[in-house]
Length: 201
Image (cartoon, rainbow, N blue to C red; front, side, top):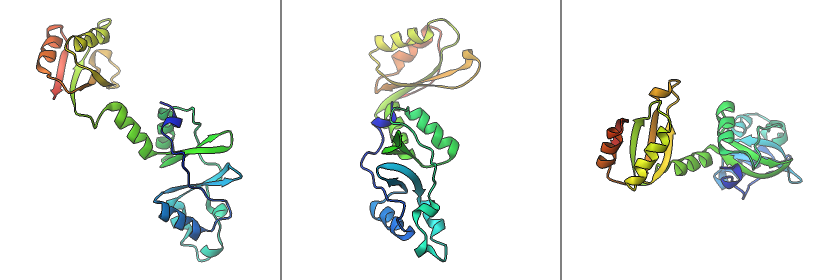
């Protein structure tokens, strides 16, 4: 999924000459923790709630502008980038959000909350569902065969996860399914030689 499908488009922004106190007020009134700093539609900086808190401790805070404390070269993503790429940037840089830019123009913002919501929906975690964890082993076309077994039992796959074990024979596959009766499905999988580790309805 691309960033543009999950990013926030209705943005609250501030110009670089905004005072610290005004920026804090804007954040508080809009219940946000990140503020893009924009000049003529172009992103020129980024400021977080933490940046403003630190700046507010300065004795001359009323004379300090956002331009003095903003991140001048923030980490950004393109609207065409994947959510996975945005998630990696947030993780590696230990930040809570990313401005989304097209060229230099600010077109959105994506936060860790937006990404988490997308992954929760993709994984079907909040849906009423069933789950089977099993080891496919190293046999050829195992995934296709298991998928056919699910289809035979009218079990719809919502999502599939996989452990990162280097030994393919020991990798665990986590199948999240539409809510269904698992006992006959588990019996069919075991009859074909697959090791079912757990089944949760």
